[in-house]
Length: 60
Image (cartoon, one colour):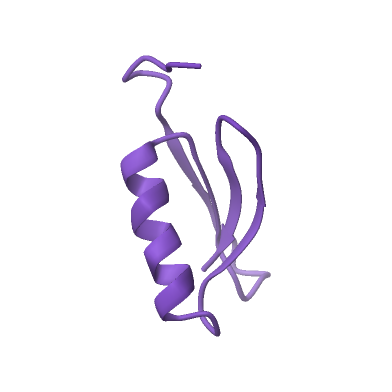
């Protein structure tokens, strides 16, 4: 499924009550960069869900 540029969004959720931020994205460029961070820094970055359109959550 091809998404328009408008639909290729990234949403970052963070609040002072938690130790991690959550990032949801549909942007393939952002996905590739985050995938590289997960591989290079597995103690810091974690992929916690995905489907065929988006990467679900990256804990940052």
